[in-house]
Image 1 (cartoon, rainbow, N blue to C red):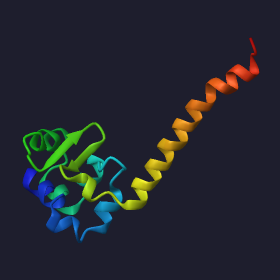
Image 2: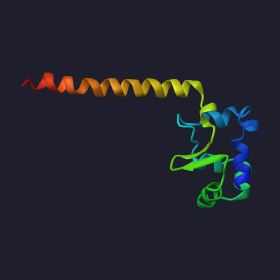
Image 3: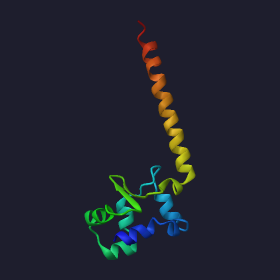
Amino acid sequence: VRHQVEYYFSADNLVRDAFLRNQMGVDGFVNLLTVCSFNRMRSLTSDLTLVAEALSESQLVEVGPQGVRAVDWERWVPADAQAAASAAAAAAAAAAAAQPMALHAAHPP
């Protein structure tokens, strides 16, 4: 199980596997259910706990609440996902900075 997932997230595979790269969130994670839905993984096990435990010892992938990702995940996240995350973060920061001003304007001293 571990070797199969490590192969999926290897440079040799990711360079060709646009589907898997497009499943990555802005933090590089792919939902473990998605990974376990691949034909080869389904033939190995349907036990998500077993998969997560097997991957916990890996030096090539990381497992977290969001799923699994390559240790060099920044290299593989689609550029448009990174740009969208940066834009969302900038918008959130601008909104947070503007909120005290709006609150002050609504309730002058």
